[in-house]
Image (cartoon, rainbow, N blue to C red):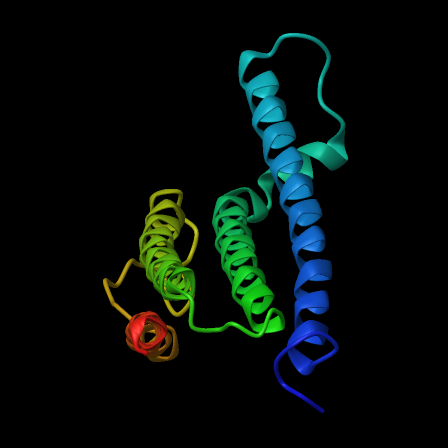
Length: 183
């Protein structure tokens, strides 16, 4: 099976990415709606206006999902952005023209998105640990906050690799343009 062009492996992967992007948008909408409803329910509960909230809703608001949902939304946004950029790259592969200057930018943008998400994840883990400690809930592995830092080497290796690949694509596009000018 061919890897580039119409009817190739790249076109099959592009189709899968197209399906995935719609699923991610739906998931983002659902999680955002849940987040907004949780904010309104919490505000409703704090103000005390109106009747008491149902017990099931109160139990849901006490769960840890209220703390983890913003991080999940950030992850979905990052993944949606990355899948969209991959779709754009695969569109050039299907067209049989992988060395276009835009692909270098897409790879660089994917690397930056992964890096930003990793930084958000590190900050969120710290904030969640602080919240658990301040409210007397045990943090995983102990009852007190122990400052620590764990580095996700796989993600940072991917960031560095994508930056290198973006430069390879940029140079390939430059050489291709140079070749077009050569007689």
